Length: 424
Image 1 (cartoon, helix red, strand yellow):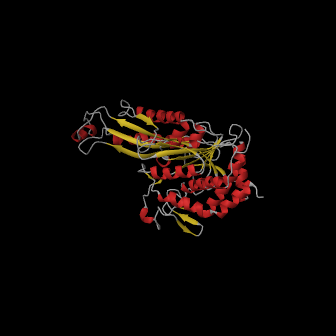
Image 2 (cartoon, one colour):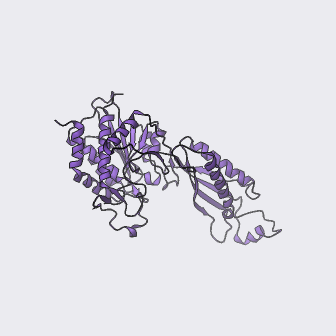
Image 3 (cartoon, rainbow, N blue to C red):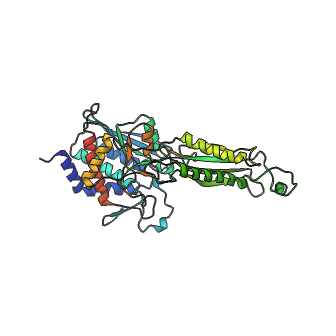
C-alpha cells in the first residue's frame, strides 16, 4: 500500500488540470490595486474552496468592497503538534502597460510550460498551489496532527495592512510561509517606511512680491518652499551616501539602505509664491534597525540642514511617518524579516526543497518587501518562499512556469505533512 506522502505526490502530478482550473479562475478576477476595492468575488471563491476542503473559515470586511479571509484545518492533536500558517495575497499589480500585453491579462494562457496572466507570478500562482494542495488533502482523506492555517489577504500591493490586521487579531502559528514571489528561494527582507517631509512658510505672498524677495535691498525675507526643497533633498542624499559607507547586513548588496525621494508636490497656483512643499520618501532599512532609529536619523540630518539655511532656520521642516494604506493615508510600513536558518522549520522546509529539486535552496535577502515582515513583527518565525520570478512581478506579459508550480506544490505538500506531524 502506498504511503500518505507518496499518494499525495502522485495526485499532484496526476491532477494538474485541477491546479490549472483554480489558477484560471483566480486570474479571471480583476483584482488590480490600485484602484483596489474589488476583491469580494475572489475572496468568496477562496472561502468556498477552503470550506470544501474542510477548513473553518472566517471572512471580514477590509475597506469598502475588499475582504480578508482566513481559515483553519483543525489538527487531530493540535495541542501536541506543530502548527503551520500559509499566507498569500489576491490583489495584483495595476496594468499601466496593457497595450504591451500579447494576451488578455485576465485569461490564463498556456504556451508549453509557460503560463501567462496578471498575477500568475505575483502571486496568484502560489495561491492556486495552496488551494490545490488543500483540495487534495481532503480528497485523499489526509488528517494532520497539527493545525494548518491559511490567510488570503488583500492590500499587499498598496501597502495596506491586511496581514497585519489578521495577526493583530491574534492569528498565530509555530511557523509561517508567505508564498510571495521568490523563485523558490528562501527570502528575508529589510524594512520599508514611507514618510512626508513638509516645508511651510510663515506667510503666504502674492507672486507680485517675488521681486522683493530676490533683488538686492528688497527687504522681504521670504522664499518659495518649492525652491527650498532641494536643501532637504541634498541632506537626504548625503545621509544615504553615509549609510551606504557605514552600514551593512549579511545577504544584502552594499547600499541597500536607501532613501528614495519619490514624489513632490507644492504651491497653490502661479499667482502665489509657493508657501508649502511636501516630499514623499521611501526608506529601506536593515533587519537590525528599527523604524524609530532610521526616521530619527533622517529628521536629525534634515533639520540640521534647514537650521544652516538662513531662510529655513525659522520655519523648520515637519515629518510624518508610515501609514496603513498608500491609497487612504498615503503611507505604508513593511517590517523587516530575518531568517533563522537553524530553526527546525527552516531545516525541514530545506529538506523538502532538496528532496524535490535535488539541490539546496538559495537563501538570501530580498531588496523588495512583502507581508513576510509582519510575522517577524508579531514574533512568528517565518520565511518568504514562493514560485515566480521578481522580473515577472508587475510586468507586462507576466508569466510563470507550470513545472515550477507543480514542484512548489510538491515541496509544500511534503513540508505540511512533516512539520504538522512534528511533536512540540
